[in-house]
Length: 214
Image (cartoon, rainbow, N blue to C red; front, side):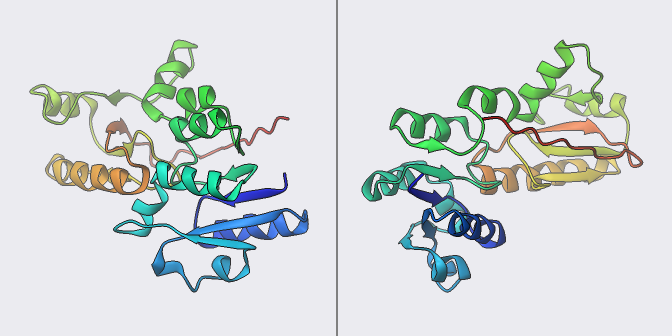
């Protein structure tokens, strides 16, 4: 690549910027005005302000970001994590314009970037998954399903990642307010307010394996 746009902010964007510098690849940083004095903005080869009511909203604006890519002639976009990193529509829109999305293909993101879809896929392969509820909170049978599932529970944003949009619930009384907060946070960070409820295992270990392919 000759020029890469970093579609994120903060520490992770700075790490990607330093990697691009080490590879002698030109960098483009996009920023909300709140971040105008951030290290990424000060160090990038080119910078473009993006507009929105908040940094999160601006960094989820696909049309605005793609317009900048086309305007500046970038070869690729690095999404880092969060925001649009697991948005298949964003990856596909870039692909259609001949711009490389530095991450999985749109098809893989559609399958594994959405927690509800990926849970269903994994379960179909015969792999055990925690008991969960996929009913909407407004469904008449929702609270009975929660009672049957038992506590503690964890509420997760379907499109979430990095621990955002995830909350532990220990009592039935706390569930509705937690659902509202989790849904709002999911919309804020991922542009998708869908959440689901899953049985929480306090003593479980989180084991994650990164897979890279060329």
